[in-house]
Image (cartoon, rainbow, N blue to C red; front, side):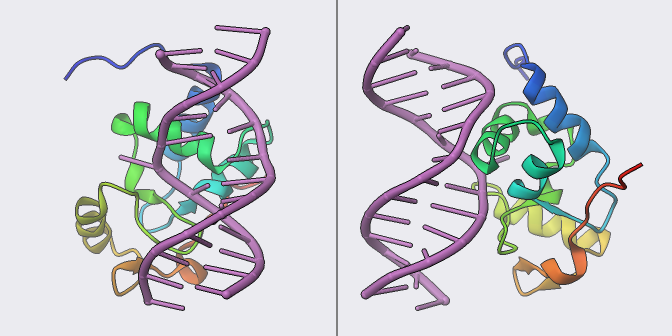
Length: 104
DNA sequence: GGAATGACGATAA
DNA sequence: ATTATCGCCATTC
């Protein structure tokens, strides 16, 4: 596995947050962006995951409608079934599985 | 330093 | 349910 290019500070912030999403829960790309409280948006988070996501539980980051990560649907679905994420067919049940970090 | 890129999101049809 | 379009904005070219 070739090492990824140098992670930007923004990328590190994204990865830190994604790493603490609990088992069986998820965050939407836009949720991650909002929780960071520093610029950026859903697309920026997606770009970071595409480049540096290999080291974090990337399958716990989903689309706002519960859709799984583009290009890794099969893999993500398998992992969610294994860790008990609330699903509705091949989509995550956002109402039940959505997680936001504690404000502490 | 301007243009292109893209694990997205909301809305419209 | 699905496709099409537009807005968003850090990063890359």
